[in-house]
Length: 64
Picture 1: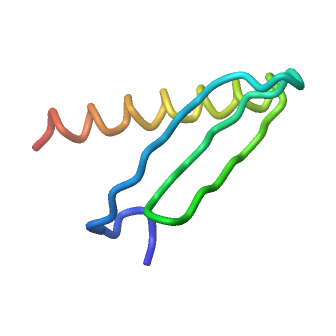
Picture 2 (picture 1 turned 120 degrees about the vertical axis):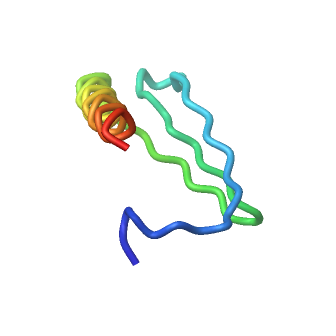
């Protein structure tokens, strides 16, 4: 399985600051909860990667 493998799994994603000055991505899927904390610089890097992926996906969508 990889990033291109489609799955029928519902998940909830929440993003926000913690009281410790970190950025938390909180993923909940069924009984599974995954809190992932990042310092602000790491969070900005992740945001840039998400934006790059969105641009790439948009370009692929326009071709198809």
